[in-house]
Image 1 (cartoon, rainbow, N blue to C red):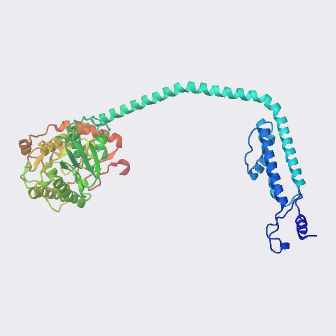
Image 2 (tube, rainbow, N blue to C red):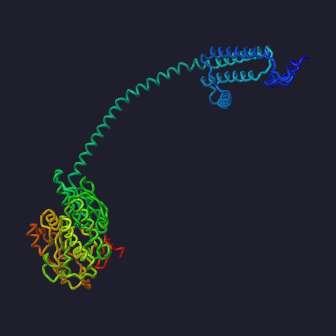
Image 3 (cartoon, one colour):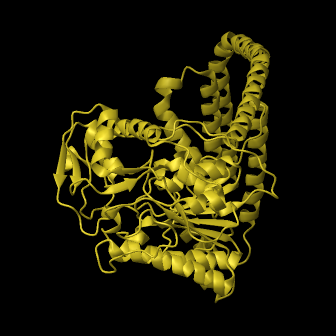
Length: 563
């Protein structure tokens, strides 16, 4: 027996269930002394046979199903068959599922047969013929079974499917025809709504540019003028959210100027300027004047500083810094931008005066180391710096010496005579007087003061000017007057006098009358009526308030539960 024959027998010694060789010798044949084995003719014949069988199966599949068999991966087809096995209970009655299952089964059988043929090493011609007949028989049987199963179902459901499809198309067409005008109407309505909203927004912006917004603190609508750019000024008001500062802001805004209110809110309150917050020409800057700030302005009203004894005595060092460093910073700003600056000084620079009434020429009688000196001396130094900048740097300056002022937006706990008496009388609580009540004061309404400041800034007079009301009252008389107006049941009580409290205070306003053509217009009674109405509203909002005494304290209202 030849070596080639022995090798073939050894190769057929191990076969798979189909009778094909389980091993494929591709390396050198050991029986040919290391040389490659001669080519095998049976291998070429089998390849040709497999090609013919594949073409035949493709043709049969095309005739049977009318579609091209896709090149489905073997693993995917096996998984599909496994899934279909569990789905038959639910979907076997569907003709589409039966057809899809038949196609997948046929294609899987074809792929399995092809895979088996690729593993054949040596196979006789009879094996290829048998395999071709088996595949052909399997395809024919599968196709016949699929057609038999589908035929009755298709005859019943085909017309229904067509009818359903046509009905669905018609329904969609009708729905589209109906929705088209609705969409047009909806789109048109939305466009109209948007146009109306845009118009309202523009009108609102125009309205906000011409007036203030009514608030609880300021319910009155204030109209603002419209000035050309050549006449409109940029004006800075330090302490702009305070009692006097907020009223000054009102006047400047109504004139049509662009106003910047600067405040650190130690004694100022945001609610005092809330009515201007939406106006395009108003700005609120939270800042401490003891720190420099860079702005471009035409005029500066420098009001920033605590003014009531309890507040300025709470932090005396900070009070001095506000009057000195704050004034230096504002003067530096005025020098840099060539702005006119006005300082609100005080009648406290006269101390406990020995001249009555007090003219601007009086130098005062001040205790430089007393509890009030942090405010008194701070303002005196501020006046000195104003005129030093004027003489050395040619800064345009104005100085107003303000006497006791009252009106709406006063802090309810600033400890001053007017606010304390009104709050106590409205609550029918004892009205406290420090001393025997013989000391005198003069009181001006806030609107008169604002008019005086405005006249001073826009005039040419640049020396200090007293701004106050010459009507003089003893403190005791003034308390009785408020009690009468409020119809209160309060009793007047007397407490020990405070240190360095002036015994008399009355302004000489001859300079203001001569140089500014200014004098108070509002009587004390008229001013008190407006102020009482304001504090009545504050009490409704805040509840019971305990006024601040003469001791140093923060400007925070004290209600009953905090006492």
